[in-house]
Image (cartoon, rainbow, N blue to C red; front, side, top):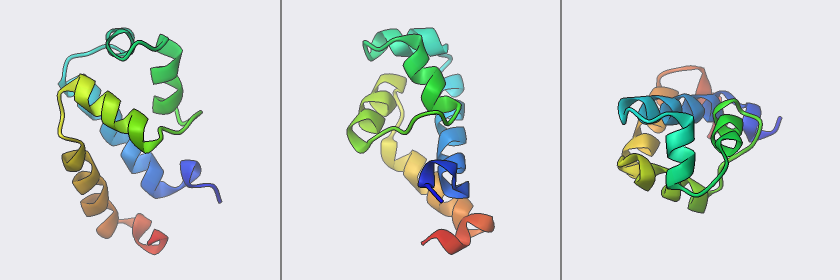
Length: 87
């Protein structure tokens, strides 16, 4: 199974969506901030494409969130849910 479809990646994707919404950004405003089309944000939020590490850092910075906090949330969530077997 590709990790984009894994439970852990799904938690990551949901954390990214929540972070964007908490920052009160639309997909379009975030995309403009990172100089990408709105479809770029829509595709990683919908699980149609993956974010690499560099893209993740750029997006997290544009949202004004600590990338480590997102990763900690993913790890904590997955340590207590069905993502456990993916280590």
